[in-house]
Length: 121
Image 1 (cartoon, one colour):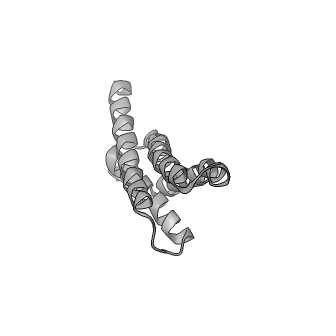
Image 2: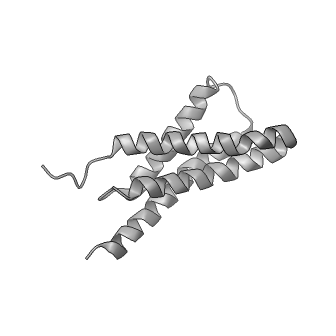
């Protein structure tokens, strides 16, 4: 059986978890030293960046469907945050941050796919 089309769920789950953990770890100092608006901007930017980085990491071991894998990293990160907050209503900026997680993951998957084309013989 070919493994080229399979989805690497374990890597996706780990990547999504690490992306969300990194966002939380980086944004926590902003909560202590900044106002809510700065926290919202920091969370949005970090959501994009961390999902991009961890989608790249997931894409290192993926043979195909790079963008899908990246989007799924963003989905996992979003679901983790929603679970941690017990799905309470959020400010609009946080909803934007969730969208940026998906965008960052997709972009990371795209870049991983382009890298694999350069490496392939």
